[in-house]
Length: 294
Image 1 (cartoon, helix red, strand yellow):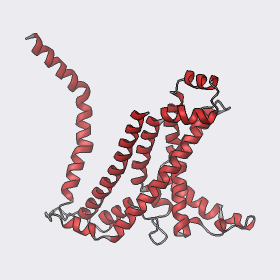
Image 2 (image 1 turned 90 degrees about the horizontal axis):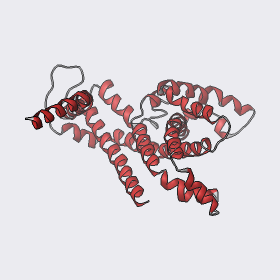
Image 3 (image 1 turned 30 degrees about the vertical axis):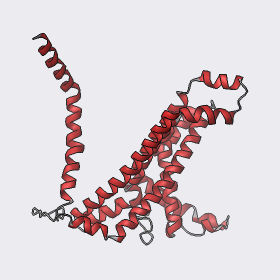
Image 4 (image 1 turned 180 degrees about the horizontal axis):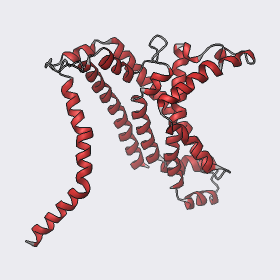
């Protein structure tokens, strides 16, 4: 009897603490995911009360939609370069801001500030900078990069997207890397210095191996955020010029809400999710494996 009462109390306590979170997770994530997968098999236009089951027809359309695959390939390239630059900048800044320089707390807050500004506002601010601020400098510094707006050329427009993305997210990853650097035992560093190791050797043999958990987390967050970017894409380039910067999220939004082909848009979103999850989970698996080896 006592054992039954004990189990009942444990169940009550578990439901009291974990129940609201589990319920919220089901309502906010599991149910929308299942409903979204269901919509990929329908011809719903997003407004009509009539929903017809069409089987795999939407996926056949997705397979032959060249514009979707072009936007997805652009997204993969944009994400790979952005993830690399974001983490290199964040790691370098974290290393600098944990070295004891003056004003490092103020600088940490300063570098984190862009992350607090919405992507939509950031896009409009940088659109003004690229189009109205940098171009007049061509009169004083006649280099080709300043001759016209970066947003008017396909190659420089994508570079502008990557620059702004790096500026926005490197401050966030900076905090994760700072936590990693601070967590490295100082006695290991001191022992290495006593043994005659220089700064390069200490970073390569002690700091980097101990920073692997922070690197894995930062890479995972960077990949998922850059894959899903829409607001910055909309306000900075609007997909132009000539759809050269139209990323997958913008293409899906256009397909689902502007063309009112919600079923096809949902199928494209599911394909993008699978690609993003495959890349993110693969790097996490490799990172965790590397972490155990070290």
